[in-house]
Image (cartoon, rainbow, N blue to C red; front, side, top):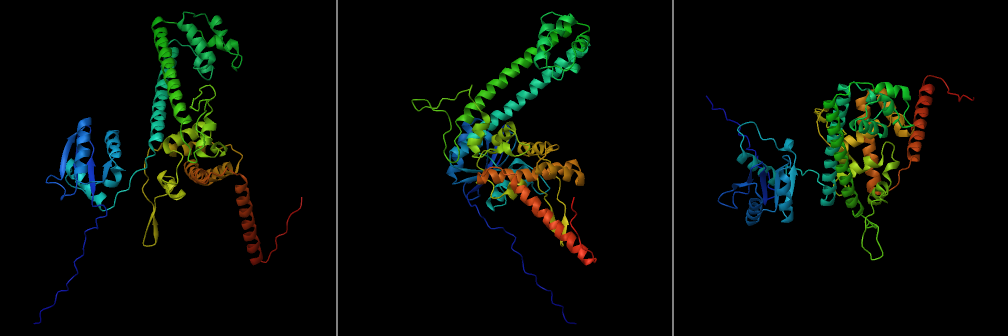
Length: 451
């Protein structure tokens, strides 16, 4: 019986080419950092370092000794920031990568394996660096995020004020729209000072309050207990303290915005006779400075105001073309476009990613503000809302706003509403042509109706 020949299969080469031979991997922790370098650079290719500043400099010295010029690290909380700045000062290229992109294969997990896995993925070019703006923008971003925390903490004390008023059965915060306005704070200060007569408190009503003085006086009848007045006093004091901190933070942001250099090197601050820059707090105009930095007035876009543009600037900066090659990549980074794939010629819906991106949130808020807008973008939002619902309408409109924003910033051309009018006219012409062609196929002729 003849022996059957076994078919020999060619052995596949599964090793990936090394694109970065001088790559390293760093696993960040709160008290210990694990670093991996190529195996041929040191007898111990993996080392651990404490997180003290002297040890971080020793880590950078060891990387330079091993001839490592690029490293990859995960964005773990805020623990990566000190090491990132030290390595960046040593001219070592740092790739801050998303933790979702470097998941290890299922199995045992340890810090040593994590840093080695990061080093391998980075050496073969499978990791993409996360977006990080320039240092001047990072400084403004830190201040803006701190300001956001201060605003949230101030709102907590406003809620404490409401609670104290509810416990005394005072309904003034339900009669006026804002307890922290002129009328609200005046009445609260009077209550803290010991005035509990509703008639006297009602006299502090501002003329712009819509509620009548009788309604205001009726809402101030309650049980003025000393313990609730004490808690109200502390809540008002804490609220005013946070308002002062917010004001100080605003002044610090203003100084940095005034001295921020534009891409085309236009004047960045008011110069005095001696030529030195002197920021003027009283004449500070945030909208003018943002227009100077971006080179175009972005508040002309429907749904955008000065504060929203400032939020986007503090997160991105003014130079988008160097970080995002096209508007497609910009919208993908914002997670405003579908991450779908294809298999066997069919579309496979991608997973819904949950991200916390302040820029995406700003674009979504701008899209939601177009509900009653009379522009082309307002019509687009309402049509999308009628077809797909509110959630998809907000995302689709935010996607369109992101493309418009990217085009204006990169080209420095002013916003022109007539462009959408031309597109709408072209769309109407195409629809009319389709109707005429269908009517002709059915043996009819369309005749224009005259009023």
